[in-house]
Amino acid sequence: MAHEMPKFDHLEPKTKPLTELHLHAGAGLPTSTMWSIAHDQGIRLPFRNYWAFKEFITVTKDRMMNLDTFLHSDLNPFHWCEVIQSSPEAMERTVYEIAAKAYRSSNVQRIEIRFTPMKRNRGGERDLDHIIMGALHGLDRVMLEYPIKVGLIFCLEKKFSKTQNQITVEKAIKYHKRGVVGIDLAGLDAHNEFDANAMSEIFLAAKNAGLGITVHAGESAETLTVTEAITKLHATRIGHGIQAIHDKKELKLIRDRNVTLEFCPSSNMILGLAKGIPGIRRIVETFLKHEIKFTINTDDPIFFETNISKEIALLIDNNILTHAQVDQCMDWAQEASFIDY
Ligand SMILES: [Zn+2]
Image (tube, rainbow, N blue to C red; front, side, top):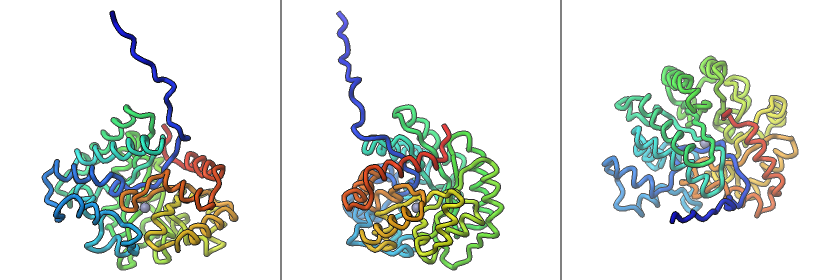
């Protein structure tokens, strides 16, 4: 006689569904998965063992870095993450694992994952389309297995040539209907040569093709300003944007243009861009006072040993936001999401 399967239909996630808009694939995977992917591909890592690798990858408060060291030196953990993820198979696993983990750990049901395709092809040795298809396979697989919506954002880089950035936008447009939902501008501009005016038409082409536009701006005082990102690069979302708290005109522009900020509390604190909890409190208070829409994000969860639940807990436990205000941030994230499926 056939036995009936027990029903566990009453089991649901215990927390509300969450949305995350700002997460870099390079720092989104658990260290153990990165280690495993590296070995699958026979990559020789310059670390004696797993623990040395883990120590290097994690940018804890004890090993606080400034943004420049973080992005531009041999100590840059992004570099090794990019090397490890530079194959179609690695990108498939990366997108799959990041989204699956976000759902299981924090009940994230909508997530936008960003990466720089041009930093995943080993300087042109690998074909960009294969890398992108690998990432899209990961997206399809995870959406089949879990009730989560995933979109990819392609990063342009401030230090890339105009042609490199143009190619990235062409690829984003080509794969728009397949799961690429927007573009971003990331990285630092070591020689201060980035010309937002010259890049304006590239961003406009992306916008006209229906892609969402987010730009890393106003993270530190030296980076591209929020005003430039909005007026020259057509951004409707800003990565960080915390420098705007010092500029009333900029705050007004953000509000008038209905721009949403992607706020990343631990990232800002660990990289020294917000001075501890008082710094985070001041940023949030200013956003609220000026009616700025902002969302809560992890940026680089493995570097900063965080996830979206921990970011929310940080804000609640320090009485920076109430539960109702966190819900409001999640509503803003849903509204500002580039995912339309
Ligand atoms: Zn970022």
